[in-house]
Length: 319
Image (cartoon, rainbow, N blue to C red; front, top):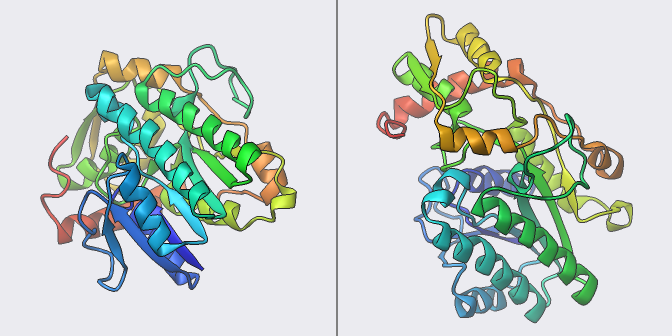
């Protein structure tokens, strides 16, 4: 199957492309950013600005993929610094990709949504269907992306599917998300033996290790359409407090010093997000189940971070 990935230069893209190739697919990546160094040279790479409707439609007409993974987005923390650009990339970009799929008969689009679609006043465990009152431009545009995709499915028959990701953690450069405090505990823990997190110690949000997130995207795409009762699914793995993450890091990096100094702007975003997600619909409809809990992630992630920093010692030096 030919598969096209937008925003493939970001946190998810490289891992997704490699996993899809392992399943035998012909995968094309695209981004304004250059090809990630870890991708083999034989992965076709296209420079694409998703805000350019003509370019998006032209490339999809040329490639005619059977499936599109739409990853292109500006994340929450970065998005609050440049909300106008975030709207253009996340909102207009999603519309452009949906329209190109409609125009050129591309049958399926997989969308990456987020816990940032939620807002204050949530229950302890948040189901799929609650009022969506996001507090960031990132969250606002992801709500609109969910609704646009559902419209394109009803109106034009596009097979639109998506997951609401928790905060994703991997051995890679953080992408400007508000959940990055968790990843920096690992990267700075390895790099300098200490990290001051920008949240309170009792902060709790849903998190997921990247291999589970990648598998979720592929498994949802492959699920029989007749089994799916909805377009967008919560998926969950674990929901530790920031202090519990710090304790787990300390088991793998003895002597690490992790402290907390809450940043008001980012803390307000974190406090508006769910503490835990109810993902029973994903479990029932397409068999979703995570592989990694916090301890298993720490055991796997720390050696990968050490390897990353050995290859690129300056990659994670900036916050």
